[in-house]
Length: 140
Image (cartoon, rainbow, N blue to C red):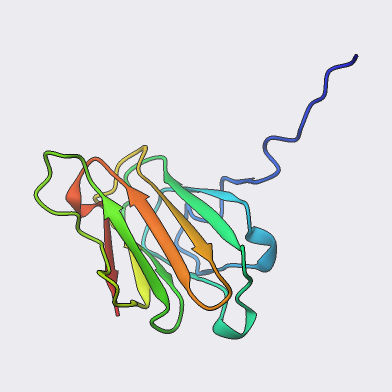
């Protein structure tokens, strides 16, 4: 039997979240991993009318950004939590059941921090992990 190779880079985006230009998420971004670095940037999730059940993506910080990356939904439809190391004093980005409009990958984020966002068709849910409190935050 022959060897099977998959295009492992097909779902890896190494450029969209490394600059400062606004990036608007697409339905075709579902399943992608975005490598994050660079300056202040706005990232817009799918609008409420276009939310797709099962849509998901992942963000991985490859170097400390020089500015915050704000990931926004346009309305308060994002729920989730940020888990920091056990020695940290605060989780920093938990929504505690109250929906928010934005998740911010802070300039203090470090290489290896990551966040995944999943959509159920009516809301977005995130889970983020980092080695420091100030890696992620949320806002309305």
